[in-house]
Length: 264
Ligand SMILES: NC(=O)c1ccc[n+]([C@@H]2O[C@H](COP(=O)([O-])OP(=O)(O)OC[C@H]3O[C@@H](n4cnc5c(N)ncnc54)[C@H](O)[C@@H]3O)[C@@H](O)[C@H]2O)c1
Image 1 (tube, protein in one colour):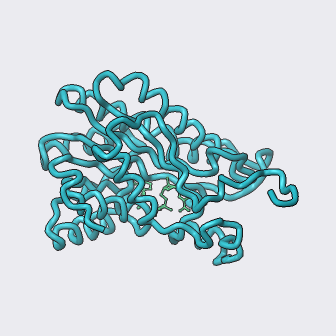
Image 2 (cartoon, rainbow, N blue to C red; image 1 turned 90 degrees about the horizontal axis):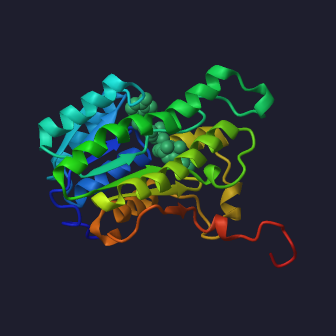
């Protein structure tokens, strides 16, 4: 697919843009579309490796090692991105997840520290980072695009990971609020909610269970590229009149009638 030029000169921050899953593929995809990319990750080695990959393919990238959960980390992300590329046009909040931060269990078995960890990495940091980026976009005067990676767990009830579902549902709400607050400045804010995506994180959590694919109308789990292309759409001028929306990228899972009636 030829994506060249779609984001030419539009500087993107990908929070959680290293690793080996959705974040890494989002960094690559935005770079292929012409965006200079700030690959932000707690894991320095993976951020650098994605940066090197992008540069080897002829793109522009900088690796920023920072913790998105801290105000200092957020300040460093904004400063280093502007030092490298002079502006910020796109913010993609990918870092997040469930099982690296807590274990799956019913709510009464959750401790406060686990609850707080999940809310911090799936909702709170996005407040910090977005709050730091929006004034930069406003000062530039020509809008911007924010894309939040949420989850199908934020749309449907999320048994045994209620904190994660609540955080992602909160992020969907935050997406709509930002659309309303900054639309007149030309800043769009949208969310992408993946279903099950074949990343290392999910493979671990599902124990390699492939049965799930049979419940997916398109017959397979998602791939990081499926999510990255949806992000590209929402980050690019292709979606210039789209804001405050949540796009489920789930292979059709959410289209199913929920009551299990014959023919449903
Ligand atoms: N994989 C799925 O099936 C799936 C489904 C629904 C939603 N999601 C969402 O997609 C996003 C990415 O998921 P993934 O499975 O690709 O995860 P991943 O672990 O591969 O990617 C997340 C990246 O964020 C980085 N990161 C984590 N904490 C950080 C911090 N404090 N500061 C900076 N960087 C940090 C990690 O090092 C990693 O590189 C998450 O928000 C997740 O909730 C994933």
